[in-house]
Image (tube, rainbow, N blue to C red):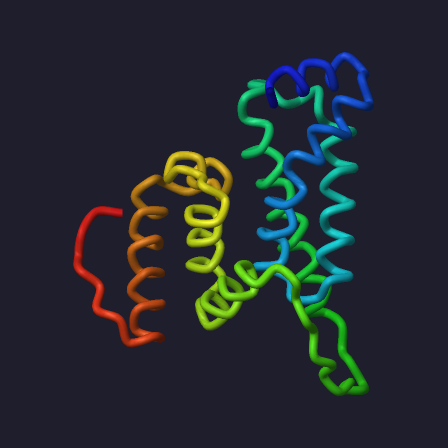
Length: 172
């Protein structure tokens, strides 16, 4: 289905492009939320990603890799936003306002992955929540399969240590 929509979108069908984005907006949100904790930043990054995807769709060489391509753009936008945020100096610290998430499953994942370094959190999120294969993750993050596998394994171990679980050694 995705490949058909990509073909139509490349031919100028804006409805096909909108349906394509609708199919993947949950994935985009989960990945962006793993990087950026602020909802406004997440929304900004998602909007920027959609715009870039729309403008650069013709550069996508293999239609079946649309989601991988889009998530890679999203991750780069998240990293840009994090870099910009690190350059800003805040003069006031606002009190925290409790946020009530309706999507409890994602809240649990967010809580579970929060203590991890970004390099482990991103890979665990892409692998377990988004269902990407090790090969897809290596393409998205531009790293070797072996690096993805080792970070996946280390990420699992760090989660287990954090929550005092026993992890058996084995393949990623």
